Image 1 (tube, helix red, strand yellow):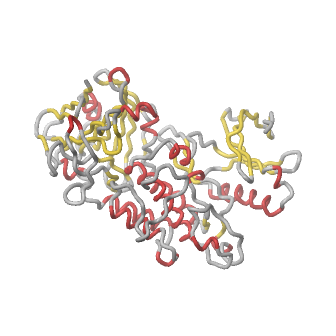
Image 2 (cartoon, one colour; image 1 turned 135 degrees about the vertical axis):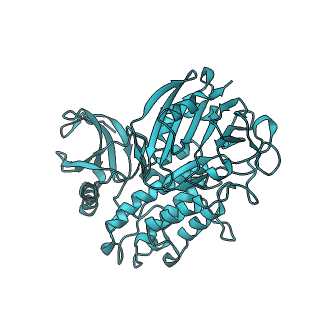
Image 3 (tube, one colour; image 1 turned 120 degrees about the horizontal axis):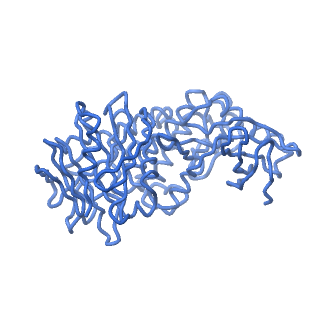
Length: 465
């Protein structure tokens, strides 16, 4: 494919992607001095008026909605040969399909991401629009000064709810589209998108991470999910993917609320915990890490033991997990464990610990301060500290500018989020350990009465040998 030098006033730098109906180019806006994505109708559909109108409908819809959870359209134009194009904000973080191709996401990250996607789809539903084609390729990521944004893209199949049923053409992607989308006489409404969200959830949390589409249910109807997925979450996904629309959640907001409630209500210890494998120094942790979400904030919690089936809380001036040693704030205690879902080259879980005045309650009680500290060589090989912090945007909260601080020989990237509900403040921090051998991740919920220097003092007490 020959790259054009210019499209309208925009200088073309390279091809970003090509599909059945359009190509997308990376362009440069000379007026604003910024990069943009330019979507152009494919040549083979140039004379099909229905496809042309669908292309323009997508641009008009995105322009009208103009929401930070959706890809934004800045302008439309027409090439000399009559093909339309739309100028969109650049999603420089790639797609969910790209990220899944690189390997499975940890369960807590996947849960938080699924809730963020549902947030974007809820914008469509509140505006009377059904997407009809929710797939990993249509979920994009965009860098932002205060964290990465999740974007819902490709509304080419989207329809106004009033026109989404009755003699409409088959539309959607096999493996993700609801059964009724295969019936031209069926009613297609918000519940079709709920089915798509449920199938995205199965893809994110499923056992077969190499599949491009979600694994089908087992013969008994249960979903093929990873062992560490909380059963309450499995129930939400099972309802969302029910064959009959009437058995599903009503819309994306109802699905999101059910997902958040399921994650937040998962018990942190006791019977039913999933054994994660060998922990630090050959110990076998029992328990799991999950996204305990309160007020829209996903807390990454490590729960487990160094010995036995009950978490051992240590009440000393320091806490240790493998090569990690932390200095505890007065009155705080630790629970040592492995970092569930992250394994070192020796096959053992990478080290992590939780510290808090009450480590057992920190996961689910928003009034309890605390911190999670983990060290991961596998994460350091995948991304930078800034990139890792950007993967945790907490979009429902207000973000302060990302800052950098050097504490105890580590250069930290720190993002602070202030939330209206649940935990009032959440801090995400990451840095590289000695000799750049591992990424150190710290998530902090400071005490309500702490001063501005609390987080830096806590980071200064994190040592890796």
